[in-house]
Length: 197
Image (tube, rainbow, N blue to C red; front, side, top):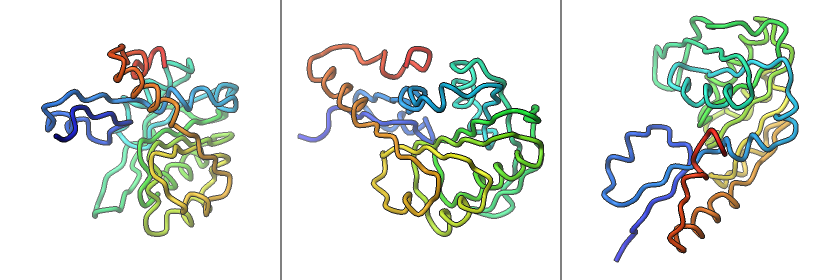
């Protein structure tokens, strides 16, 4: 008895997969976010990772959207406190897609948005897979220059509705399709291929 397969989305630490001795499927929210018309229609675009750890994720979005990749270099002087050091790349006069896998306290995400605006970004659209929104996250996000924020429903969190200009994008169809294909012994690789998603 017990689980015989794990299906997850946008792991914060991919090393977690190594702790399982059963099949482990890692889906990507980009397959859903990149179907949002407002995101598809962004022109003169720079995709930004709010930290060095998110470069791989941001690079996948930049490739799919044929956009420039920009990275924010930060340090953490204390737990749940981040300090932005440098913006690596150019956002001046560009629309920005700020991409992260998780927003917890929103310190990094909101600081990133402020710095990007100071560096000349025209608009800032955010995407985040896991909306934890602990502490004063909603307040920080509401005070940040974010024009629109898209999050998924991987976490059932009523706090998301405390944030202005937010839209929850459902990932139930991609999980449902993964479960269906698994049940029928069909390949689910196309569901987690970020180049096809």
